[in-house]
Each structure stands twice: as C-alpha cells, then as structure tokens.
Image (cartoon, rainbow, N blue to C red; front, side, top):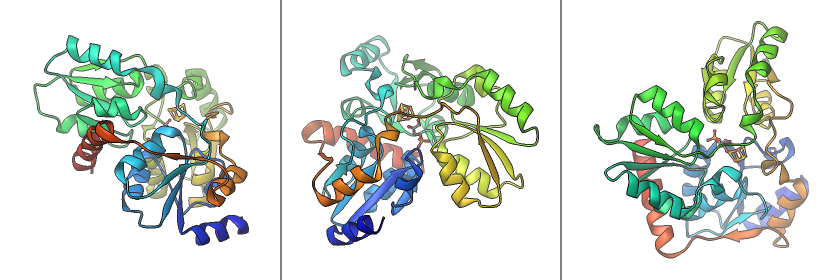
Length: 299
Ligand code: 13P
Ligand code: SF4
C-alpha cells in the first residue's frame, strides 16, 4: 500500500476503481464508483495519468472522454463478456431492420459499438435517458437484454432488445432471493438491473451500483441483501460501518473484475505492467458524441 501511494505521487497518477474490484484495490484508489461516476471522474482528471482498475470498456471510455491523459489498464485481459456479445455488423443489421429507431447502447460495450450509437447509458441513467429521447421514436437497446427490458418496463417505450447478458448477474436466481429473505427477514433486497426480470420482480429496489450506495446511505434500514457482484459489499461496509450487508449469492463474482490485484496495480504505476488503452480516429470521435449525449441527457 505504501509503495503504491509513493508510486502514485511519483507518477502524478490518479487511480480510479470500480466497486466490483477487490477490497484492497478499492482501498488504494483515489475514486471508487460506478460506471457513470467513473466516467465523470475520468473526464475531470488533470493528473498526468489515469490508472483504471476495472475492465477494458471502462478504460476505453475514460480514454475517449479524456484523450489528453494516458489511461492504463493494469490487467489487459480484463474484458467484459457482455461487451463482446454484439459486433458492429450485427448492430448495422439491427439498424437496417429498424430504420428511424434511435440506438441506445449500454456503456458496457466496445468503442466501435458506441460509435454506431446515438446515445450511451449506464445502469444509473438508462431509464432517465430513454424517457428523454424524442417521443414516437423506437429504441434499439444493446447489448444487455436485461437492462433493456428494465428500461422498457420503466418507460413504456418501444424497445428492440439484443440478446447480450452478464454471466455474473445470471447466476443470481429467484431461489437465492427467497433463501436470503428467509435468512434475513428484516433486510431490504437491492438488485442490479442486469439481473433477469423474474428475479428483479422479487427485489425491494432495482438500482445501479452507485444507486445502491446512495440508497443505503439515506435509508433508515440497517440491513440489506445485495444482489449484484459481491465486490460492492466492501464499498458498502466501508461507507456504512453501522449497517449490515449480505450477498444474495456467494458466487456472484465477476472473474474479469477480480483479475485486478495490488501487484498489477503496482506494476501499472511503476510502468512495468498493464496496457495503455487508446481509441483513435473516427471511432473515438463518434463514440465521444454518444458519450457526450449521455452526459447531457443523463445528468
Ligand atoms: P454499474 O453501471 O452499476 O457501475 O455496473 C457496471 C457493470 O459492469 C455491471 O455489471
Ligand atoms: Fe461485464 Fe458482468 Fe463483469 Fe459487469 S459484472 S463487467 S457486465 S461481466
């Protein structure tokens, strides 16, 4: 930890970490947050470098939003399977089949997919952004079918879904929720919208990871069952020492988020590991337009 603090200072680097990172990695970060909060933070960084403890699409987003700063991903193999579940050709096909629809893409997507989209969203602002799109226009939502169906349910908009999903959130089942309720009858169940619909119907609140942090901080309840990737339990416990948190499923772990370690963070800061993530040319320019539309509509 001390070595990491010294390297950060030497290099004048800022460390950003998603709430799904290991606790010890979160503890070394200058900012811990959800995808939206991290995008906003990345845009404002004026340190010499950004070390992004998360998965590739997040580092790509930071590089697009703040091209003047090198963005280093400590674990180059840390991808997001959902982001790879749609190709540019498949999205072009959807657009051709639904001319006149607007394309809304979850930030959990590649830069090429963002470049083909009208607006990006995160799980914290998807509903708001969809409700602000011009009335009468259908929406093509990619790649997550579950967040897309959540947007459809909440806004009543016409939404064309793609078949992407998150393998980690798919592990959370209705039986897990029922068992957690039996074990912790006084707790509120907070669930991420990437969880399938039949399970979401059993939650007390459906929230992004940032939404969960805000909800817990302002709630009069003191016990919660958390139905998302379990890294966030560390964040919640640290932010709310008087409250109790239980994971709905012990195996709700994202193997890609869990690749990040103190060692890879140290190596990235020392310049002996990690990968500089850059997005260039037309793709960067078009993806930036979709991200800026998100920041405008989703704030
Ligand atoms: P958030 O948008 O809540 O940060 O979630 C990102 C993610 O990867 C969820 O699996
Ligand atoms: Fe991707 Fe799911 Fe991991 Fe989030 S939790 S980064 S959506 S695989």
